[in-house]
Length: 491
Image 1 (spheres, helix red, strand yellow):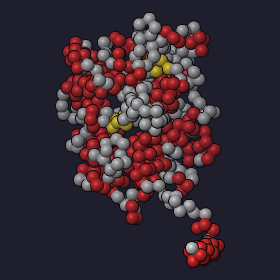
Image 2 (tube, helix red, strand yellow; image 1 turned 180 degrees about the horizontal axis):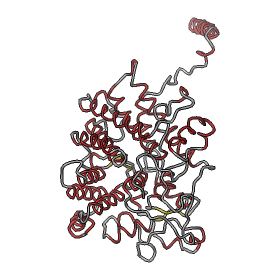
Image 3 (tube, one colour; image 1 turned 60 degrees about the vertical axis):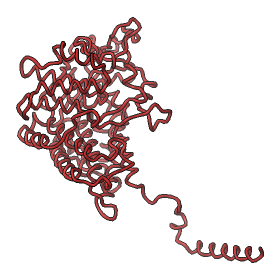
Image 4 (cartoon, one colour; image 1 turned 120 degrees about the vertical axis):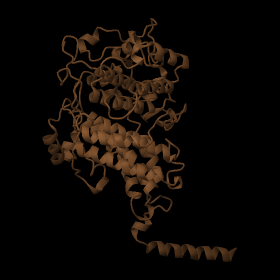
């Protein structure tokens, strides 16, 4: 025992001597800490954060799309007011650039070069980056793209023109699809993919469907380029069934990392279904009325009017209006980046305008059917709806058929309210009429017209003034009624 104690004492002295001669940086390094986060963790985090911005969805796009109405300070957005002196746009900007884009850009850097180079993982990360950049540019128009969300390497990122951003996103998706078509799944994100469980064929379908969406979004402003890309998309597999949806599934759990964040938002904020949305479902005998809209205390489906001014609002009884059904905020409700119904509706629109071959009505009814199935509508109710309701079949003029497609897409985007608003701006359907009666409605800062974009974040003017002002000079006034590049049809 004495020998053992002696040896321990010598080793202790030796260790102390060595430690005293180590550089301070080594002494302050935790040997149990990771030098860098693995790209698997960053990839999963980026995907999940791409779905989490529920608060801004409710405040802005869910009300702009006339699906919800709130009764707290968020009503200001429903009144077409802006928030440039508040933190709303700053928080929204940060939610994209400091959230998912920060993580996914790190994945892109890690998988592009060096010992961690992996073209398959890089392609998957590129798709997630594009979903977020697409949302950012559709929010503001010109945004930091080539230099956006690069951490400390670029302090003052330039703003790219939206036209160039769209062209680059479409080109990068094409490259990603080519890689994933022949990729070895062992090189993907097995165990770290919360969407497709590393099914690379589904990732390729999503990338092509997203490319199709981007091409259709630009078809009014750049018809020839759009038509060429649409033709290319038709030559590759698309999302065609609900098991291929880009869907983040949630659980009935007490752990906030696993359940749908709309559940917490519903607990904290009181919101009602919109009159426009509710009346449309009622008037067309749409079976989704029972899925989305809760009858009020009198057993009636009654939506609240969007855009009332303070005086008119003070005269209404809030409890008279219909709440959303639990399907729209339950813990287990899925969130969707893209679903099969949207793809079939886009195909219906493309066929209607002779951009692709096929029967527009057949595509339209397939899209309707898939969305009804997505919400677990009874099969008999689906059959009856398709067979008896005029809105379930394309009819009338080309413009009326386009209206039908746009309106069904509006419903099918739920719960992706941002895309619902974007598609209204792109197509003009459903029509959101200008508010003209100031004795009833808030005309806001747009003279009663539906907002077109968000204003740039106030901290961008403080921290990146030259670049944001350059964007404003080219794009137009930094106002919420200045349309983005692709928004040329008007509404």
